[in-house]
Image (tube, rainbow, N blue to C red; front, side):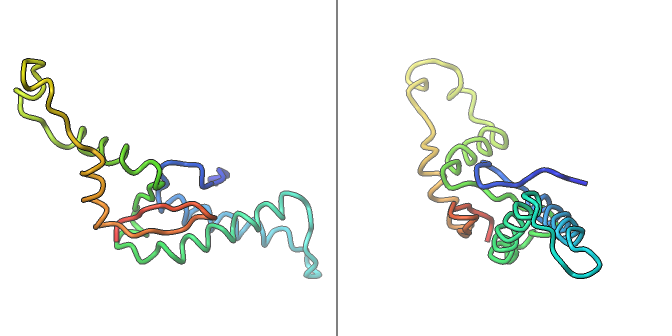
Length: 137
């Protein structure tokens, strides 16, 4: 079992973790119900129900993303520029002149904010309990 709360303070969330946590919480909430159909009102039960509601709402919005069930990244809006910068740095090799430290190349920088604005056209916005996340559209 996962047993790890997923909350909207995380910079990047994997959709597979959301799916697994929803399943786990559904089982947990069902376990709080006794045979007579009376719900236990323990704090854990109330917290599980609240987390489940927030994750279901997120999943309802985000599951239109093409790879939702296979693993899609939800990126917190405030982290998106850093996320795009990491992708650029990890996936693209800059020409050797640009990384040489020699004049004038040492004054050339990548505009990560502009790159993020351009990349954003491939993403859609979703709400996770009041916080905006971006996921591939």
